[in-house]
Length: 218
Image 1 (cartoon, rainbow, N blue to C red):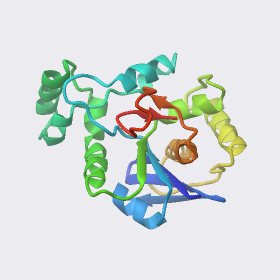
Image 2: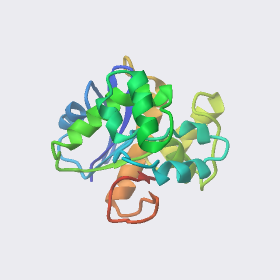
Image 3: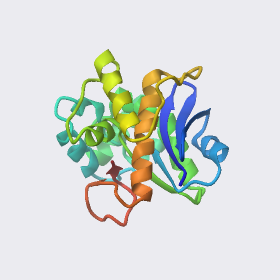
Image 4: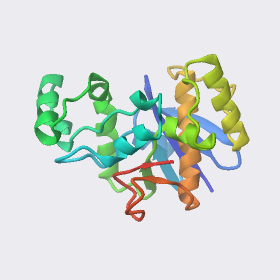
C-alpha cells in the first residue's frame, strides 16, 4: 500500500511517500507532486479541504479543543468566496460577510496553496484525498498527549521518535527550499493517510464518517 502525506513548503509542496520505505519528493504544485508518485491509496494534506459558505467549520473548534496549549496552530478555514478575492482587504471583508469572522493574515498567506488544492480536486484526481493537521497527528501518535513545539530541540526529537516508532524515518532528509519541520509535518500526514486507507483514521467531526470532507483526520 502506497500513501502520500503532504505539507506546504517555501517552494511549493513536500510529500512523504510511504509504502515499504519512506521517500521525500518536492514539487511546485499538488498535482505535479501526486503525478511524481504514481498510483496511490490515499493522500493526506495539511490544508483546508471543503471550505465553508455561511458558518465556521466545526472541525477547527474540535481540533483546538484537542490541542491544549497548541490551539494557536489551528487556523480557521476561509470561506469559499475568499478564493476569488484579489487582495487581503477584499478577502477579509468577504470572509467577515460570509462567516462573521475576519480572515487572519496567516490564512491569507496560505490562499495560493488552498486554491492549488481546490483547483486540483476539481479535476477529479482519482485518489482519496483528506485534510489532516500534523499537530493532531503527533498528539494522536503520542497517546493523545500534546508535545513540545516542532521548532524546539525536544519537540523535533520527540516527533522523529514517534515517526520511527510507527515505521516512518525522515531523520536525515534534507531538501533545498524545504524546512526540516515541513518534512516532519508531511511524514505525520502520511501516517494519517495510511490510517485512512486502513479504515482506522479518526474524523473531526466524527460524522458523517462516509464523507471525506469537510473534516480534519488523524
